Image 1 (cartoon, one colour):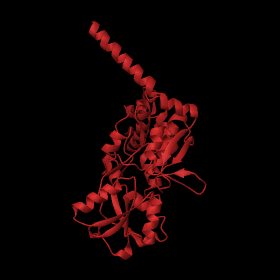
Image 2 (cartoon, one colour; image 1 turned 30 degrees about the vertical axis):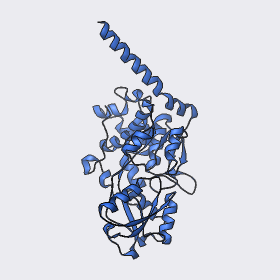
Image 3 (cartoon, one colour; image 1 turned 45 degrees about the vertical axis):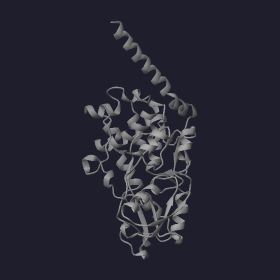
Image 4 (cartoon, one colour; image 1 turned 120 degrees about the vertical axis):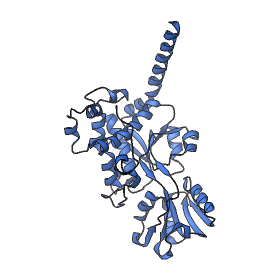
Amino acid sequence: MKRVSLVAALAAAAVFSVSSAGAQTLKTVKDRGMLSCGVSQGLPGFSAPDDKGNWTGLDVDVCRAIAAAIFDDPSKVKFVPLSAKDRFTALQSGEIDVLSRNTTWTLSRDTSLGVNFTGISYYDGQGFMAKKALKVNSALELNGASICVQTGTTNEQNVADYFKGNNMKYEVIAFANADEAVKAYESGRCDVFTSDVSQLYAQRLKLATPADHIVLPEVISKEPLGPLVRHGDDQWFDIVKWTLFAMINAEELGITQKNVDAMAKSDKPELKRVFGTDGNLGEQLGLTKDWVSRIIKATGNYGESFERNVGAGSKLEIARGLNKLWNKGGIMYAPPIR
């Protein structure tokens, strides 16, 4: 009997400890009245400001969805543009609350930087962009090529692995940021530019004559991209993670910006849990019962965000590919809200 009581007491203490420590970031964000979100320095489709300074993109939508879940106002976000080199330091130091900036989930990053990846918002892979005038149709034809690359990314190691594995020689010309690398590529300082395929499509839009450049067919790596938070705050980790999962689940359930109010009236058990009319799942996160409704009204579901920012409805026109839902031929999948 004493043993049972001791176990119960320890469990209760652990729950209290986690809940009290875990509420710190959420409290900080609420007290500030604003979410601080780290984004890229300008990558069309993912995070980029327009000529009026309004930020848009797939990564931006994740930030706005978090703000909507907390404040019921997707505009309560301060966007902090960060280079690849500075992005982790900004998160570690507390300058930002979440990093939503085309960042690849790797073991070394997950274990050595004091950060947690909260999920995968985009399945990507590294590729190469070349001028059509080079008359190269495959990355396997790049023996002896000079390659422009951005420092502080996984791209350099991937290039080394790919060329060594195919017994090819190459020369790396590295730059501090992507824009510098692309300018060097366009001016002819290197033969090809390498980055994640999504970034190649985005950067190609910035070139003087985008039609003169092609993205080669080879994808040489796995680059699962997603938002990050600091270690040590489980509640905040859960909020960011389940915000992304809510967007993905909403698409699977057919919940959209247009029909969210009508769907919230459904008697289906699964939808009642999602919309908070049955149970208190939102409150378990430290949010309100209508947290999912807030998110979808602000940004739409994952599919809507994808199509608007990088898909068929955007200038990038990137096919969904692996980012289709798991039941539509892709691998995009979220744990259930129950």
